[in-house]
Length: 383
Image (cartoon, rainbow, N blue to C red; front, top):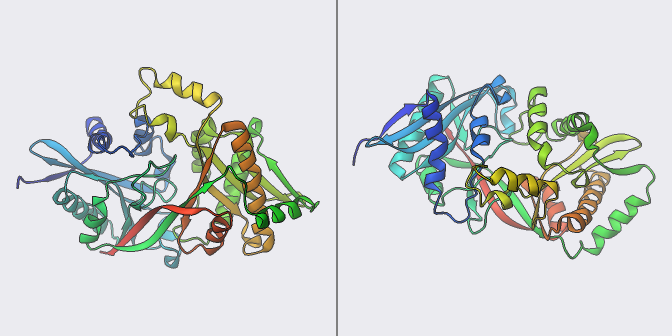
C-alpha cells in the first residue's frame, strides 16, 4: 500500500483542503447534509471562534499519492481540564474530532498522530469525537443512519465505529435523540399537568423578546450554565462564547419557539426549539452561491418545516428533581408544540441530545411518547 503522510494544517490552502474533504467523501450519502462552508471555516479559525480563548487545536491532513485522503483535529480545552474528572473531562483529558478518512489505514494513521500530539501536550487520556467542544457536534453516530440529522447534529459513515474501536477506544457515554409526532397532542397525563400549571398563579411561561435579544440570550445561557453544571461533559460557556452563540443563532431564533419559565417573577427554566435548518440546506451543497443565499433568506422570513429540534432545555439546579421542574418542562413543550404546528406547519419534533443516564430528561421524553431515533457515542482511551 502506498505510504500515507500525515502533516499539520498550516496555510489557508490547507484549511480549505481540510474543510472540502468532508464534502467529497460524503457526497454519495443521501442522508449527509452539507454544512455551510463558511460556518465550518469559522469553527476552525481562532480569530472567529471564541472557544480558542480557552482552547488550542492542531488540525492534520492525511495524504496519499499527493491527494488529501483524510483529516482530524487534536485539541485541548483548558476549561475542560479544570472540571471534575468524575464528570467526564478533567485534568489530562485531550480531545479529537472532525475526522474523515477514505479507509481504515488512513484513519489509524490520523488517530495515531492526534494521540501523539496530545501526549506531547501532557495529556494522558483521549476523548472524542468532539468538534471542537461538547457544545458543537459531539459524538460518533452509531444508530440512525437511515435519515438525515437535524440542525447542529452530526452524521458520519457507519464504518467509522469499527475503526474507532479497532484503535482501542471504548464507549464513555451515549447521547440520544428522540423522535416525536407532535400533530396529535400529548397524552392525557401531560395535559392534566399542563392545566394544573396554568391554574398556578406563581407560574408564568413567556416567549422571548427578540427586541432585547442580547439580554434574553444572556439570561437563557446563564440558566444553562447553572442547570447543566453537574452534567457529564459539562464545560461552562464563557461570556464571549455566549455572545458568539447568540449571534449565530439569531437568524433562526423565533420568539414563539423559545420559552422562559418564571416562578414568582424569577426566571428558572427555558426551552429552545429551532426549525430544522437542514431541510433547506440539504439542496445547497454547503454554499450560498449563486442563489442559495436568496433561498435561505426567503425561507427564514417564514419557515415551513416538517421538523422542529429541541437542542436545549434547562431548569435551575435548585429546582431539579422536583415535581415543579417537570411541570415547567411539560408546559413549555406543550406551548411550543402548538406554535410549531400553527405557525410553521411542523409535524414532528426531535429532542436531544440527551445523556443516556439522564433519567429525568429521558422520562420527560418517554412520557410524551417519543422514541429514540439516533444515538451518538463519545469514546475514550488512556494514553
